Image (tube, rainbow, N blue to C red):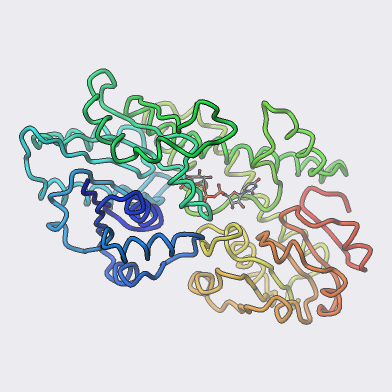
Length: 449
Ligand code: UGA
């Protein structure tokens, strides 16, 4: 089958290369010429384990190529929409400019094919109502059908999440009559749907759920809202722990042993960031308000507020430990919004860095992958690649992204490098007793002094 992917950012690029990996002929379209050049040269524009390999394999077999010319993909059977829907500059809602423009350009080149179906498949995270609106536009062309197929991939696991997802969701206009379109997308995903054998799926295969457009749109945002809520819930418990002297990691462990709660996304710390969770919950709130159902998501404002407070709390804790921030030398371990990623969008670590710098501290940041992006975001950032060099002469160390190498730091060796052994564990990943035994003044969010 001939497939196009429109918008080859994170989601689209991974999807395009994954579809080529399944054996399809794939063409990726974007307006960013530099990105197309890099992808065509087999160079990944972002840090994502396993992606460079499938990208290069796709290019080498000739199954994958990239273009800026929309005419080249007019004859594809299936068009995936992988465009970003960032937070609007003027408010909480999602900016659909790129998505709308892409659908407009696609509609202008799609041929009417009597008797042959063309599928357009939306993958972007969108406000409820978007799919039905776009379908109204696209389905005026004979033979064209729109499906909404939200993407649940995580950065750092993007290839695996695409090729071995937990579930696949198809949103259609009317589940009763969408048989032919569903069969067509099933054919694209046939190998994924067969799925590898997993102990948790004795009957085999990946569950594929068909529902209306609105439900499919909502599944995606509600999944992210639930994950964000889980993180802010444990961070709210961390605030209580700070008021009572309890240890939030004891609470996470005990809660997580209840199967109904589950142990994932219960790690307290400096909170969630990245290109999805923060902007998605805000767009969800805005969309609910537009629909007249704002009250239903009032709690998400609190989820956002708790998340923001944790960033401020780290800065306050640093000030408490040092007396003043002005002129003090602080080393921050981590710039990415999470480990195994070079993404610094809405990174809690970088926001803390900016606040410390604004308060007059001399901040040095280190990160294995994200320094280039961090430098672009924060003007005048002092960034050092080597961890030992970054620790040199620090009066306070903050661990804000839990890369393996920071979790494995030897407190005895590290104490030799800094000027005063003081540390704040902003991700609750270090063992306080080990650090204290090595002479460190140790503080962690949600853990006792
Ligand atoms: C998230 C979702 O997990 C994906 O399912 C979704 O497809 C994606 O957004 C998206 O909408 O595109 P991602 O942004 O890659 O994926 O990051 P997560 O792994 O969800 O982590 C988000 C943030 O939560 C990170 O800053 C992480 O440090 C933080 N986090 C995570 C915690 O603070 N505590 C935890 O226990 C877990």
